Image (cartoon, rainbow, N blue to C red; front, side, top):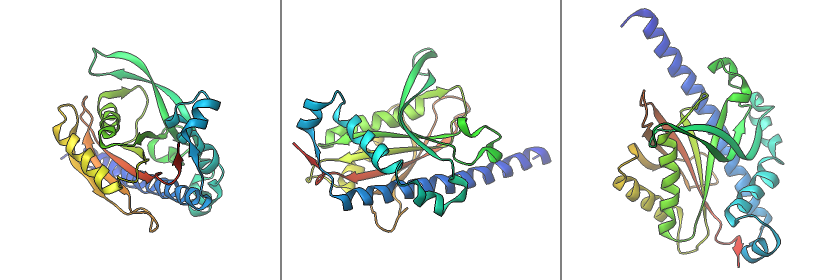
Length: 247
């Protein structure tokens, strides 16, 4: 292998390793905020949201999590990682993508939770404004809802973005039923991934501990469907909302 190519590969591996560690800290923080939410004993009423807002219930849960927890407790994260002093958490940020399954047609992608200013610009040679982690959210009340969750994984595989896309994505599942848990939900997601003709999976959801106070976190690895067929990793957080959601 030529020296320049070898150096490039080594440098890229180092950058990806640094980025993985940074995303790992952000995922830890998301779990920390979820634990704070549990301590607050919040209650989210589906009937109240329907009667008093124009949000879908999924959007309401997402916005509540961003506005009342991810945004308000950033000091916890900043004290843990100094490079995240400027980190921002937004919801429903729109990015342009090219649909590789539909003749390269352009479309608008609404990102559920958009995390940027990751303090990585010196590693990726891209402005912090353009470096972001995307986290998609889905409600899971019955096992068949895992189909929508897997649809988001499919989007990660087939949507090609004009700007840099990190080799890491995030997903949150709001588990609303006491009849389900992260184990049964992850097993159903893996079953559906095994049947998918669109998603190429190198590693199915595998339990991974990112925070000592939470067991419902997972990693999976997939392949982008477009050239150069890059590998990417998804961080999965399966949050138990069964005691938080009421009618």
